[in-house]
Image 1 (tube, one colour):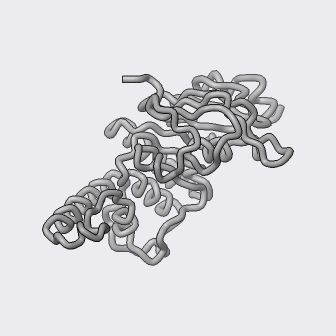
Image 2 (cartoon, rainbow, N blue to C red; image 1 turned 90 degrees about the horizontal axis):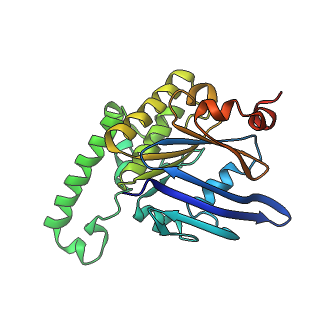
Length: 253
């Protein structure tokens, strides 16, 4: 089985005269938790957007599970097993926690005209999807909130629901944009603990943009540091956090 699940090769993305990504290459190892750090404006979210198909790169290549997926749309990557969450959770606010997971089910025959005519088939599928969603809610620590509407959740709970919804697609790789932003420290640690559990029990790979290093560092395997659209360091947490370029660009003197 290939060691790397995601490879970015010489990616470049510009917006007018602004070079947001400038020849970035990196490999995300399978079944590991990798984070991408850097000061505001360094190109982190743009890189995640290119990797997940939100933006098409001007040049370079994106490979997912050894397949060239450069320029693929987000929904195509989603069906291939790449999930994505956003800094601000985008849920269906009036639906319950369970319903928010069920809408992410990507193969319900009842949503097709002909399939909807065969009730036995789609009812069986919906039962299986509900059981799957229930298992995911248990993994995320949300079982007791299954019937609560999304608008009635805390910020941290919303982040967990969004991760759970991504898992409904059977994702092998999850790209998370600041999963503990705006979350109190206790729940932030719980979110990363859940991420660790998902890696260990389900073998899911995580590639995460995160600013709150005081929380994230104890949970991650690999770090990539960006500045001015380039990768300036990569390696273990100790290697990267003690790198002079990172100290200068990201942490200060």
